[in-house]
Image (cartoon, rainbow, N blue to C red):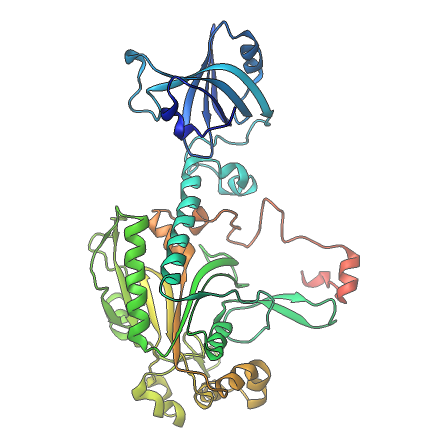
Length: 467
């Protein structure tokens, strides 16, 4: 008999069915045995084994929580006085005719039928495949799929191309510390995992694709910083022949439509989203990630805002100039002359725009420097010698000199956005297999040592004294 999902049982009252799933709980009530079964449809149902079903009863005696079983039986309406209206499927039950054990389970280290918020997080991460069985986590991960699917379909319907960019790329001094991957074939040389697809998406504009997006995996080897992950997911986007307003308008509409689709219970504090100059945000709120909600405790109110007019450069710890966001941004049109003349550097404003939600920066972008001379001036201001720029970014300069159109884009941190829409306190709660704040995978026990032979192939010697 074909298996059906538990959520479909009400369409089969009076019929013989086969259902399979995990034992939520087994209750032995003397002559009757009750088994609450749940499956991947996120539904549960009570099944009952009557005294006359001796074979099924004998099998059920051994069953414990989290065992995987198959039940054959008849779907019945419960008697009126037995209906539990507050419980899912509380008006039906399955009268069991047969029970088959598909797999046993060791006693779980924790109860997966609770929300898990009172548990030690490390044990949840160690047994993440069990933690993911709980209803809250199932709904978070499925919500993530729904949101990403909506964004993907929305952009595809507006002539954007989803294009994958390389994971093995080149280490360049443009931001956080890179994760590096040694090359076996080119001894002594290394790839880097991308902190973002920034350069590739700009090169795609040079290639003539016009509208690009990607659900991109990104990697940053940062020191422990609260609720951060060494690998994360962002919605990456770039467009040709656009100005700042074009990108911001598209993204604002996309965010509004996404929220309406996947979180219709949420309400917007203000539409259109307020636009706040960086200097005003710092003056009024003391941060460039302000929480502008009228009621800071109301998680169902979404107070989006744009932060604009950022300084292009700031002083680094050595007294030199560095970029505030990334070196590829274009200055505001009225400040281009100051950039090209390397004058009044601290006063140069960039076309950078950040999107902030309830006190969290969830995305940022800019119009890019599509002129190689302007990009070179950025690096000169930062004190880079031309040879170093050519070594690290020669491909970008060559592309810009090959007929690259004006372009700009943005990237969202999908994990953070989903966290806020799900009313969670950590991005780890909306990721299937997150790492600890220290970058450890407790389930896979990584990072880990590798065999001596692998190190020899790579020409690497570990200096234990420095570990």
